[in-house]
Length: 436
Image 1 (cartoon, rainbow, N blue to C red):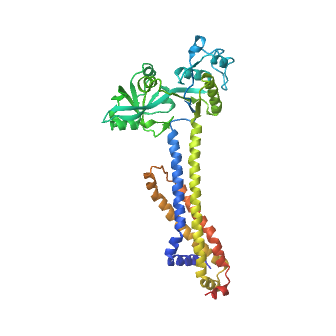
Image 2 (image 1 turned 180 degrees about the horizontal axis):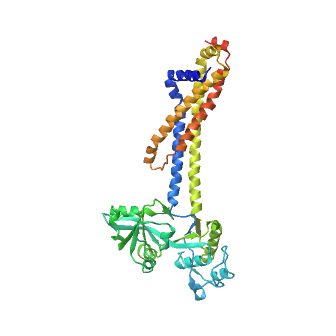
Image 3 (image 1 turned 90 degrees about the horizontal axis):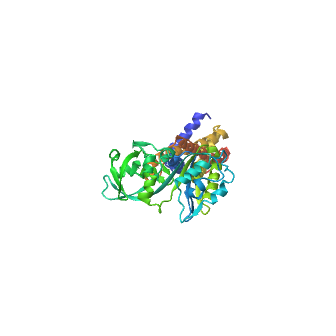
């Protein structure tokens, strides 16, 4: 039998059983739609991770204090304010000059609270050779008034030093970032994140050079950041208000409530493990009773990506189960179809159709059902995406997802349609013709 004749028979059978074909393909439709949506959610999750960390490079290191009560280091503990046994910065590999660590211990002073200081930045810069930039960060919440606000707004206030803008790759939409002089003089100036500017002034262009009240003190807005959608050290950049570090400690948070973090950038990301180990060793000497978390952006990104990928794999596994159920549905319908059309198969064989012709006919019917279901499912997946976005989830449409869904559909139809098709092909003509 010629291929076009087989295709014509397939088409006639499909047309005569439209409702059955549609109901049979439901499992494939659901499976294909699930594959498309699942991959879109997975890609959306990866994009969220990239957006979250896009303002940090892989060499960024965050040092946070976990201790409630610890010890603090000050240069005053050493004669001349220096480190005994050291004559200059270490030459490589994070090693420390002989005698330095023993000398450090004499400079530890017991106090009630661990607080990183600018002196700690100097020590880290001096003894850790792989650090290119380093800055202090302190953050908290405070009431903000001004602009078009009728009531006070609780906002995240971040006290940072000048290097923070370079380390986190901040871009200014208006104005400029504050200077070292602003920090040293504890000037009351502020740089607003994009969303913070919108919340306070409604119109971003009205924010620049305006005055806002933070903790009942006036601050002049000297800059507004471009929208980033990024989070750095648990601070959402778009909704934060940035002020000089010393101003935040003195006027907003108070020295007793301030818990600073240190953010640094490594020169060579290939030496990240050594650098982190050296930082932990130095901190253990400076704060023997302290508890610290030292993490790098690269590992945070990798962990977040791994979580997103794991979720995608689990969802794809669920979609695969749906495909299996759909395939079983196709197989059951074809089994019934073989029973119903046994006499037709006997007539075709009596007219000269070979086993191959019968096998191909039923396989093509199975594939048509699965392809139809796959196409409808892919279309349904794309139509459902806007609804998923309304729930707050990020989704990214992908042509690859559509191809994968169609492949799974065809594969399912072929695998689950083969056995019933083979049964039909193996029927003996006499028995088939005599079938009631």
